[in-house]
Each structure stands twice: as structure tokens, then as C-alpha cells.
Amino acid sequence: MDFLKVNGKKNLNGSIKISGAKNAALPLLTSTILAKNSVNISNLPNVVDIRTLLKLLGMLGASYNHDNTNISIDTISLDKTTATYDIVKTMRASILVLGPLLSRFGHCEVSLPGGCAIGQRPVDLHLKALEQMGATIVIKSGYIVANAPDGLRGATIVFDKVTVTGTENIVMAAALAKGTTTIINAAKEPEVVQLCEVIRDAGVKIEGIGTNTLTIEGTCGELLDFKDFEIIPDRIEAGTYLCVGAITNSILKIENVIPTHLDAVLNKFEEMGYMILKEPTTITICPANKISPVNIVTTEYPGFPTDMQAQFMALATMANGVSVIDEKLFENRFMHVSELVRMGADIKLNGTVATITGTPKKLLGTDVMATDLRASSALVIAALVADEETRIHRIYHLDRGYDRLEEKLTSIGADIVREKE
Ligand code: UD1
Image (tube, rainbow, N blue to C red):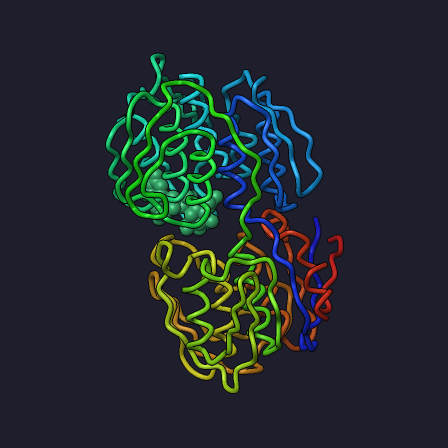
């Protein structure tokens, strides 16, 4: 197993180029199950989650040529409809094959993802919506067994909660259904928007893209004619590197971003005293005279993303005063707290609310454990300002979602190396 060794307190500056968005690439790759042609996709992030999904699509019978950031994928030959436990257990987002497999083949079996480090994370809303579209679903031996022998039919779906992958699964299911599907309380994340745009460009009439009501006219089983496309930049990777600039109080330029995707995050940096310069595809963060504390409530897009909560908690440990972070989406997304406390942070947890009493220059390096993807990046951010050496273990979590993290950080002056346990 690999670990990262970070020596903090280095002066950082320069620019970092952001990779394609993992959470956009995952549903976009599974959406190619709906294609009648081979599809060229560019700006794929080179991360483990993408390779895991490609392995799953390969096991289902898809063929592809993949060179890290570009892929040509062909699902015409896809002939299996079972997503097995051994792969789904390593990546919950495998659930994104459910909607497209069921709508194309009228049958599929997908292992239940189960819990994960950040909470229970059920998929009940995905299943209920597919049942409303005419599917029969039973849970058998840990598998979701879904059948719709006569095809799915359009329905009006009202999601009880805003769910990102739930919305994506139903958009993909509705694309080949008979009739019109309306999704009320749909997710509006940029990743959902890109999926809708790609499916629309492939010939499906979709209205309301980017709003919380989507109307999709299905093709009644006819496969789609996909155009080539490029994955949008990863707003969470961009936000993570902006936190790197913020905590080290450096001037850092983030390239290949869509600044409007980060509005809620950029507002919080400004509230903390940083100056943010936006250009059409870059964001530059400039040092704060005094880092102010911040109050954050995580919520659905366009609100503050839960995927940036851990990184801002690391940053808040350096603020002059008390910050409060309320995690509204996931019940157990505070695994990084105990690790930050081991580094000397003063953080109190009460239910979903963390209170961070910041003290500049207080963190001290030690051995810490990465627990999930974003918690891991919070530990890297903290390590960059800690005294002495920090060793971050179990970094396979980081490799799931950050493309060449050490290389990007080294290029701006960080002292970070990967070693074997
Ligand atoms: C996606 C993102 C993840 C991000 C999250 C919230 C991907 C691959 N992952 O995860 O990085 O943190 O959105 O922005 O895009 N819920 C239910 N029942 C369901 C589905 C969801 O109760 O059937 C609940 C969840 O437990 C959670 C909330 O709804 O409390 C939102 O979860 P959801 O948006 O579905 O998260 P994911 O799509 O899994």
C-alpha cells in the first residue's frame, strides 16, 4: 500500500491545470450504453474510479481504446447485464449502469452498493422511480434484480430528496422509454447538466436542463446517435487546489475551470478574506491579510458542495476565530475530524455540526489515515501547513478521484512524495 509523506511550510506559487470531472465522466461513460455508435470522449480524468467503471463496462461486453484522457468506446457488442458485487463494492457509482441497462435490455442485475465511509447512502429513490416507470424490482441475494420486458414507460417522478446519481439514472432510463418522463425535484449539478446535454445532442428531446424539473421524451427503445464530446472540468478538484492556495496563503492560479460552477465556494473564500480573480477559464486566489472564520451549510448545487466540506474544515483550522460547518447531506461525513484533531486542530462535533476553533500555525505533522476521497484531500491540505512531517496512509482513496495529485502539488513547490508502507 502507498502512503504520502508531506513536509509542510513550503512556499507555493504557480498554476495548476484541472482535469476532467470524475463525477461527470462516470454517468457519461455509462450513458454510452444507450448509443448505437462508437463514441469519442476527451478530457477524461486519469483516476482509479474511471478505470474501475471501464472494467465494469468491459465485463458487460463493451470494447474501448483508452489512453488516459481520451477514449473511444463501443457498447454495440455489450451483451451481459449483471454488475457483480466484486466491482460494485469498490465503487458505489457503479449503480449508474442500472438505468441505461434496464432501458436498453429490459433486464439487469446490479449488486446493491451497501454502506460506505460517509454514511448509509441508500438507492431507494432510484428503485422507486424505476418502478414508477413500469419496472419490477426485487432484491435477491444482495442484488437489485430489475425487469421491464415490454420496456420502460414515461412517468412523473417526484424525488423526495435531490439525488445526483438518482437523477442521472432516471434521465438515462427515460431516454429510451415509451413516452414522456417528468422528473420533479431533479438535481441541477453541472455534471447532471452535461449528461442531459449529451443525451439531448444524441437525439432525445429534453426540456428544463439546469432546472429542478426535467422533461424527457423517450425514443421507445431506439438507440441514440452520440456525438463526440469533452468532459467538463472538475469543480471539486479546482476547489481543492484553491484550498491549497488559501491555507498556504499563496498566489495560485487554477486553469481549465468554469468559474461559475464554483460560485458558492468562491464566495466562502471571499468571506474568509481572500481575493479571487476570475477570468473565463481561470481562477486566481490571492492571500488574505487575516484569515477570517466562516460558516458553511452543505447543500445541493448551486449551494455549497458537501464534496468541499472536509477541505474547508482543514482551512478553517488556520482561521482567526470560530468557524461552524453544518453537513446536511451525509450523516457520517466527518471521518477527517479525528485525524485533523490528531494534528492539533480544535474541532468539536455535535451531530451534523462541527465547530472549529482556528489558531494560525498550530498544526503539527504526524501519521494520519485517509478515510474517504475528500477527507483524504483535507489531510493533504492540512499537512501543507503543518510543522514537521505528515504521513498520510491509505491514500488509495485519493487515487480514486485526484488525477496526479503529487505531481500537480510538486509543480507549485510542495514537498510531497509517495512511498510504499
Ligand atoms: C453524488 C456524488 C458525490 C456527492 C453527492 C452529493 C457522484 C458519482 N457522486 O453522490 O460525490 O457527494 O452526489 O452531492 O456523482 N439518498 C437517499 N436515497 C437515494 C439516493 C440518495 O436517501 O436513493 C440520499 C443520500 O443518502 C444523501 C442525499 O440523498 O443523503 C444525496 O445523495 P445523492 O445526491 O444521491 O449522492 P450520490 O448521487 O450518491
